[in-house]
Image (cartoon, rainbow, N blue to C red; front, side):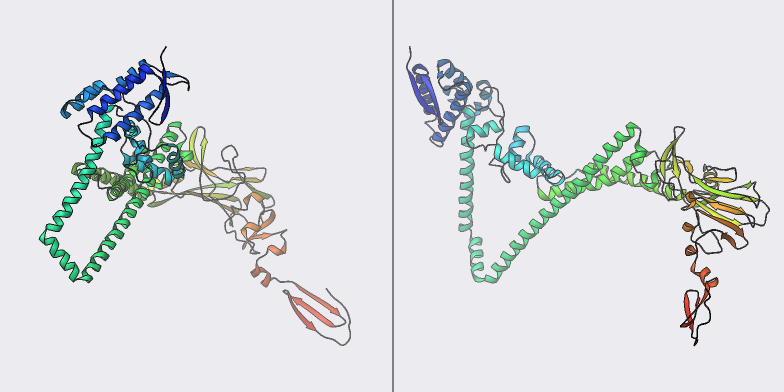
Length: 580
């Protein structure tokens, strides 16, 4: 039966049996003796060693009543290393360290020695083995693009402890926490502080003993104006440095936004293309259509033409913020310049090719007779195709809709114009005029002829398609269809309400606007259509002035005459009669 002793090791309370206590005491005394020849930092080294031993022992304790035995102390000494192993030359220190220490494991701490705010980025860099600069850049991206960076940084600042002791600093960098590393770390810190103090003292002594320094002091004493100027110069230099840093950060921000957008767009475009519905969701620039260069190559050219300059701006911003960033080699610079010029030439060629596609206007005319008589009433109606278009209302517009006709992708357009004119012929006829643009007259005429348009006459109903179909590559060739209906004099025609947005500058006697003409009967005259059942309110002002209303009214006050909405009064002594 052994005695148990209560000890405080590194601020942690332990129960330890007497034999284990004696072994631990001898171990610490041996370490103290090994450091006795160098009292510089000895106490701090011993405190860190005790803290580390306390941490290792606490990991083995499962409950508060558990007693530490000799086996536990033996395991600890194996991890920490034996004191006599370090009574050797400093040159052999590093070679022997690997054999004496346990396998290192990193722990996440905030680095107080390399911190900008709280040391979170430096700690993450140590933990993941990444340079601190890239971690900070990543954090800026989170702040500017997703808005969560500041909140996450504050949370990590609160949750992650700061590396204060030497053991924690070693754990942060993944180095084994044993006597040798603790001693080495503390010696390095003392040497660093000592060298800084020594350098500062030597620098100050050199300046004081230097005759030139004395002359400078005398000159400054003599010239207060010069001192003010130098102070202002330093102030301006500081301001310009801050401004330069701000410009660098702004360049990084703008370039990062553009590059991320380009990369995201490239991945999105690639995914959509692989799924096979790119044309439905991606709107390409005009010069992509009907180009002799493939879509994917034009996309690469555009990515490089935009991405390379912004990548250069991004690296320039990093160079402004940190002098540690290395410049590109001459080979890299020339390679980037060459690739960028090739991308510009490719896009320039595609732009020229697009411009030539619109250089000439082409026309294709088609004329067909309509078998009807002047006593028949011809009803005109516009038709759409609900199986092709998703639009709920049929009306003329200048855009295109991507549709599939017999599993072939085509453009669905309602750019159709309807004209109605008189003719000297005895029979009515319709003239279809298809228009398109092309890189030469022949190609433009062929593209116009290829436009798919249909109409039909059934039971005195002229059914006109309110749309046409064309190849998908013709999206920017300004294609349209003009329909001109020629009617003999005295032909009666009824305009269906579906024609409202398609009528285009129809000549009529009453000067009625095109949008007011549907849902009425008209008769063709030598001067154009004459409405047979229209309300007078839709007549044009010119027609009303030439063919105004006239009425008379006689009452006890006299005779009232109203001509073209203007009142004229004639007074009599006695009333005679009232006429309306």
